[in-house]
Image 1 (tube, rainbow, N blue to C red):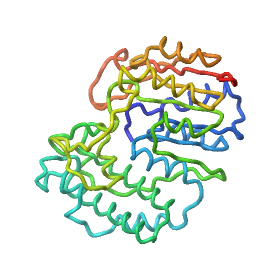
Image 2: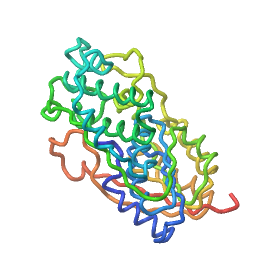
Image 3: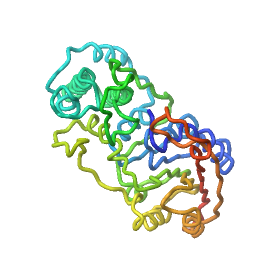
Length: 337
């Protein structure tokens, strides 16, 4: 998925920097990915650590990570369900089609009419199977994550869901085909949460805490509201031209709240090693972060230049405008704090 703030291009660098501090052998370590997003960093460490704890306040993130992180044992016959879902007769009265496709009269065009109907059809059947106990929770999250990623591939947007395009673009005109969201299998059990990070931190402990909070005032709940609507598949009245649902603004996106929330998180963390991904365009400055983290132990900083996320990849911009700096703030926390 194209995702703002995704660490896909930076995951190997983050892994290397963590190992430089913690050591190469992570097999007995508990790793927490506190603001998990699509779970790229958690997936990177899943193969190497004893346990991954994954958390995000967004429901779509919770679904993705329930599959990619928490699922770790073979699910027999899962492809059979994918095939069945791909070949169902389409519903034309589902929530997505009625509210987010042009043919229904909604005046919104997040998906083509056919793809909107197919999302409704597949989502309705997954819900029915779960309620009738035809599928267990592991298979439920696998199928729902598969739908989420497959739907995203045919969305009629410029990557995020803050707005839809006036005309159906080429990729959005293709038929939605449900593709399996395969996960890493291993012997270790993992945990996934859908909580406020500052509340969860008081309930968990481990060895390595990785933090990747929002950097600025953009709201993931607004940018990815369609994904939450597909995963929750609840009934509500979509608001405005873009069909938004109600959402809560994160304290990490508020200039007046971010410093106190961040310090509270660091203070309450029962983890020896803390790594914070942030960049040079964030609400908190490099010095802000340093001054807070230094209070709690040994602090250091690593930086890396990389290409910024571009919603519209067709436009040519110069290298300087396209690049940004990622900061990896590192804290080895004092044990008596």
